[in-house]
Length: 160
Image 1: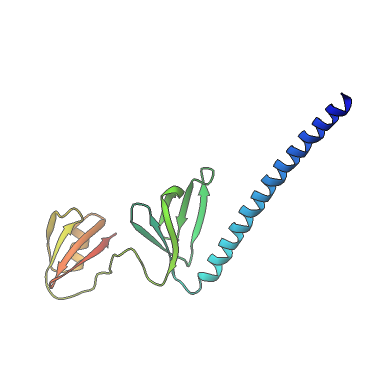
Image 2 (image 1 turned 90 degrees about the vertical axis):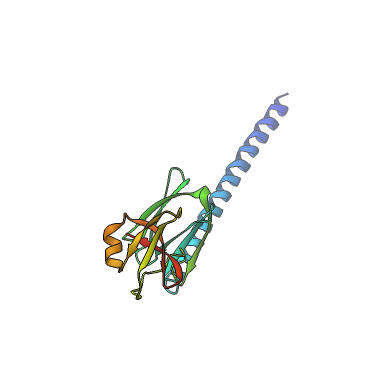
């Protein structure tokens, strides 16, 4: 009976040891993966000026990498990304894809000064008005995303 209790005690100790070893290996795997990701970020940032996040709802958000900062909060369930001028917090579960890009991949074009009146609409299709130039548009509308029809072409713009 004494031998049997000693065997059970050794078996329990071995099980605890294996569990601790498994947890340690998982932690090492996580740390190694994190180090590889950070190394990839550091080496890729020189050749790609943007880091883009594609969310599960299909929208994309792009940040410049020059002064990029990423912080995990809420036990790793939230990611806050800051690029010096903008900051956004994502739920990690909502991020479908993260990738480096050579251009801003949000699908919003920069406004150029072209001749002709601009007809402006909200993203839901509501007509906002007709504007002669981008300055009058910036002064008249709230910050947000708009559709601009000008010279037979339609494009998305962001007013900040």
